[in-house]
Image (cartoon, rainbow, N blue to C red; front, top):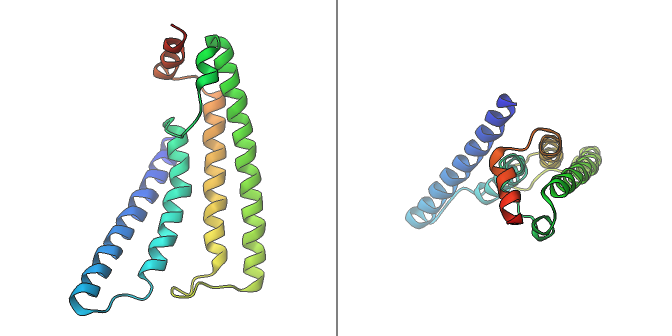
Length: 162
């Protein structure tokens, strides 16, 4: 999974860098020459979609997603670990459903031939980003459910019991 880790991180880094550079140049052009790129805001908006959906997999992998864990803190360690596995499997199923829906929507959009206004990109590409990000999330939730629990995570659940 190291390859997947590097791929996700690289895509996110490039998308963040590209959006920062585009915004910086566009702001400079607007304030210096009173004119900017007409496509800049749209490009940044779509790059943020990439960062969001690809970055979700990174957040799941690193245990940095928002969650409510008060119930886990009230449970015994063994029960808490089992509940976390169930929640991760359910989240995986939800991610797969989202990927399927996004894919169907992408293919429907492709059939209609819709394109973005400024960049003239096919809209279905944007929905495929949601599909890919959701599938990556599903993989990460499966990892979280079935791979051994990291020592730091096991300690955090155990410390809550004390």
